[in-house]
Every structure is written in structure tokens, then in C-alpha cells.
Image 1: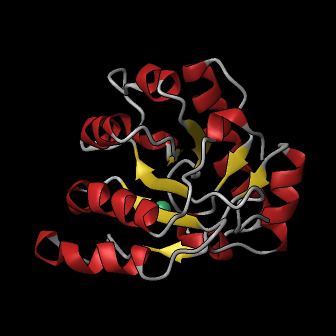
Image 2 (image 1 turned 45 degrees about the vertical axis):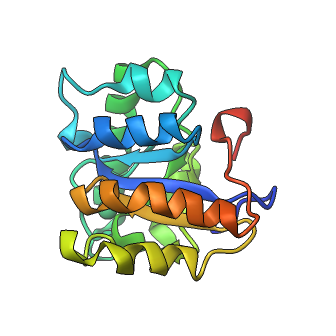
Length: 191
Ligand SMILES: [Zn+2]
């Protein structure tokens, strides 16, 4: 289970997509020359999901299960099916191996570890939560502060594909860099 990045760089991760806000998030990351990780739920995949742009810009794609259930409430077989299905659907779409998994809500139990091992997935959690899902467009300052005030070397940051995240993201990236921290390049490493 991973909560820190081993090379001291700060890693931005985006959960609960792909959503209609993905393209704008990608444009900001591209403009700022930042690479992140997208944990997608496979029940949101469509023919229009811009996965090629995600990969060609150097981002990684991981599994966030198929339908975003609470894994603590699922028996082993249900957990296995959620993860297997999402891994298979994502791999079929992008043509690459999916190697990382983030359990919905960050909730898991011993069965989740077993499922991840059996499906050759590393479980990636986070160290710093932006609480972007909790704060609306009128509370973008809070989202920026939640990250910039708390982030330090090697931290994995939790964000979501949401409109308020689009507003906060450029300031989050600038704020992290102003603290002298380096942002990760996930395409150049393996978890
Ligand atoms: Zn989620």
C-alpha cells in the first residue's frame, strides 16, 4: 500500500473520472507541464473518453473499481469482480497493462489486499486530501490551501475531476512549486 512517492516528488492524482471536466484538467496540466495519475471507474468509460490524450501527455491511468462501491461492505468475491472488471475494461480500452488501483473512498480490508495481489495491482492511497469534492466553486481558496499548506516532499495528493478542481488546479501547482517542491513525472517511473 502506497501513500508516499519514493523519489520525494509530489504526485497529483485525480479520482472519480472520466468526467466532462477531464479535458480542461488535461489542458491545465499540459500548460503547466505536469503529469498526474487518473484513477478511473470503468462504468464511466465512453467511446469519447480521451484516453489517448491522457497517455500521450505522460499521465498514468489506474483503476478506481467499476462502480465505486465501499469495499469494506463487500465480500471477497464482490471485491474481486469490481476490480477485475474495471481492470479488464480499462486495459481493453487503452491497450496497456493497468498496474495501480485506488479503492473508492480509500476504504479497504484484508480481502482488498488479496484481490490486488491476485490481479497484480499496487494499491495507491494518498497523503494530502484537497477536499475538493466537499468545497464548491465559491470555496476554491479552501481547496488550494488544503493542498498547498499541507503538502511536503513525496506526498501523493488527492483531487477529483470536478469544476472547482479546475479553478484550484493552476494555483495548487504554482503553490507546490513555490514551496520548492518538485512535481512527479509518473510516466518515467513504476510504482
Ligand atoms: Zn472515488
